[in-house]
Length: 296
Image 1 (cartoon, rainbow, N blue to C red):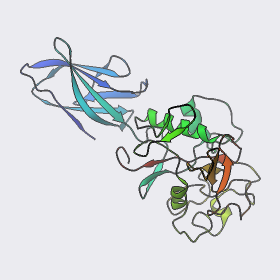
Image 2: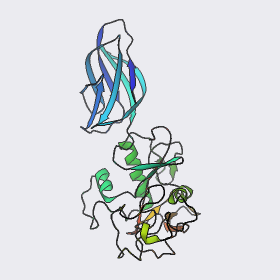
Image 3: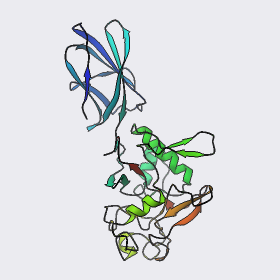
């Protein structure tokens, strides 16, 4: 998206200073004005020398070769003689490489969050015997919410979860960041054909790793057939946390079955209530985003 900066002034040229709020300290971000890179003062402020006040200036934010979005521009005043400062918000959906597909009102993760993406975001290098392309597991429900918020911050999106008192987690329904699907949303994207017992299939082993074919181990994502929405491993591999609480706050719903699940247990219509404070080798998570501002 092009973001146009109009500098209205009687003078001919001035230095232009642009502030981009809450941008991670990452050298791969570059701000350009009229196609020319601006000089970075720090991770959030760039400067361009002697820009004409009578011209239309085009600001773009880049992460490598990926163009991000700038918005909410506001002139906040002059820093000193000859300097203008502009503040702007930013977003860059997909920056972290988590592939998503549009399904109704949602953008849905193509796969469960992998070990590799988890380590990339968390800065961890602890070896996982299954490898970086396997779904991340052994996480409790709250850890998945924290991770979703971290991804939102790193892509300039609105965080979906807020913990005001250290106990109750609030879900901001108008957020455009990453979040867990609700139980109803998960059912909706699990299969195009609602009559199918598994992910658009009558045979669980063709679309997911279950007890019958998994050797009781996690497997790399997206090896078996996908469902009708091009999603991987909706059936099997690992169960997936949902946002909803059935009745008690300490219990949360997981769906999809895992690598230890029998054919009956792995059916899409089978939701299991699991203690929210516990993690397990056979439970992971998939993230979604609401389509709207910032969604692609």
